[in-house]
Image 1 (cartoon, rainbow, N blue to C red):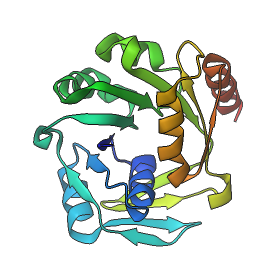
Image 2 (image 1 turned 90 degrees about the vertical axis):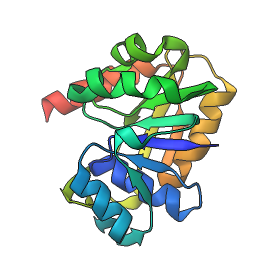
Image 3 (image 1 turned 180 degrees about the vertical axis):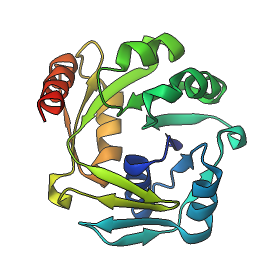
Amino acid sequence: MRIAIVGVGSLGTIIGALLSRDGLEPLLVDANREHVEALNRDGATVAGHLSLNVPVRAILPEGLDGAFDLFIYTAKSTYDDAALPELLPFFSPEACLITLQNGVPEERVASFIGGERTLGGAVGWGATWKGPGVSELTSEPDKMTYDIGEMDGSLTERIRQVKGVLDHAGAAEITTNLVGVRWSKLLVNITL
């Protein structure tokens, strides 16, 4: 499975490091040239509740080529208008994208790439981007969870495959109520 992590800030750097550590070889894609250069030169560094440095391969968006089977989308929603259309030529015929953005982004993401390609997930852990090549895990490693699902709540083989990938960077649970999970997290975040 060819994997790209798009929008490699605080979460994407950590997910990329953990998937790379376990041999999944994701391609990290980010628009911050200094960050991409540091990742390629020094590896992805995780600080805080986990101390880890892993060699990774990172590129700027214009360096994308070939077809990918899974996009893990961790970009800020303010980049959707630019980032999502750039990805379309690189979807394999059966490819999907899981958005791990905050809020309730699935419908907006689907408007760019198609609902049939869009999965969603809520991240249950925290991180802070510290600078080029470095993210701080602000949650305990055993609290690194994801609630992921299809937009229509169906249980599919592809959501099971995505769970298998994300389990390398925490513990993913498949939900049949993605909308409920998303709104619950949003309400908790607003309260905090």
